[in-house]
Length: 394
Ligand code: C5P
Image 1 (cartoon, rainbow, N blue to C red):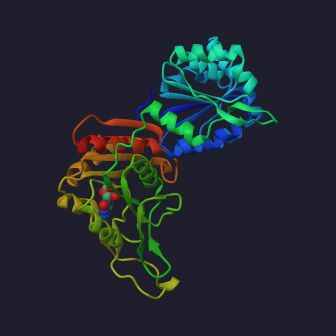
Image 2 (image 1 turned 60 degrees about the vertical axis):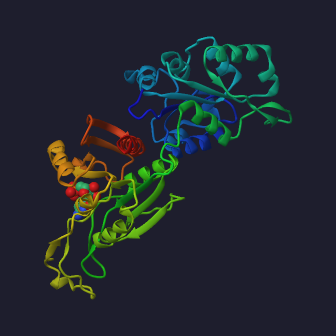
Image 3 (image 1 turned 120 degrees about the vertical axis):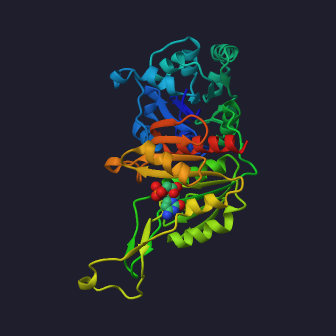
């Protein structure tokens, strides 16, 4: 079991529908699932390991003989919350029904004790064959969820029951299995993301390395869970997001104004943005000549989060901190000073975190136990923070 209960093994059997599983994988990721793809060795004839690795962002193994030191059939099984096997061929169904363990996927199935959903796809004669019918019956009797294939045209000229179901239908059924509930319906979540820029002159600015990726992960997860989301985005690309309010800002002053307008009505504020601590005392309208560009006089920016903390009514407030040393002490001090409920502290030593898809750090809470995270996806962190926010909202 994983910390966020969203770790899924996508098992891929050797059917032509394997190419449709590429889209399935993407749609599952959009819904907050974190996927490890385990293809059967013969399925790699249809879709290769490189495609799965690129799409999932994780290493892909199909045999127990690869990376043997990792003992993948146990280590993957331990962290997996759900299995989705799609497409499942007649052979794969038969091997699972017989309890065989002749590739990594079937080893994992035996080594796990979590819900397994199977999406068969094969020619109608094979689906209707007495052996397949008996195998499916046996699997259902053992608690496996086996979807009915669709009726229609197959790869060749034949038609009947055996088509890979529509991806939307698979997801609907899988969500029901996992209980991926829309638990944030009616909640207003205000998120800040990216890094502010403080103008020095028309060409130069003081900025920082924040990519905005974590705020995108939080916005996606919150939307997925049914929340109404407003993102105040500082110098970041939001083109992958839909169905939310976005206010684009550049400087801390603009971010302050954008947050002030929406804070009062939000239920949760997640202050993910890296706000510049200081800005030039003067911004000049003409580009400063190279020979005169020797020093910049700075003044402190207001602490936006601390300011909002003072205006808090019943909002749950979550802050982020990036530290290179004394992680926990510094973050706990900020939690108290800024009136936060939760703070996530990133360990950014050695250039880690910025621009990456994974994060390592600690979730510290005003009430409740701290959670240490090591190399988890930013999506997983997003869901953990939303879980906690929801708990605090009551
Ligand atoms: O920079 P610092 O470590 O204090 O940032 C901690 C939290 O405070 C972050 O959530 C950040 O978005 C917020 N912050 C802010 N205004 C600032 C500096 C930081 O809102 N001027």
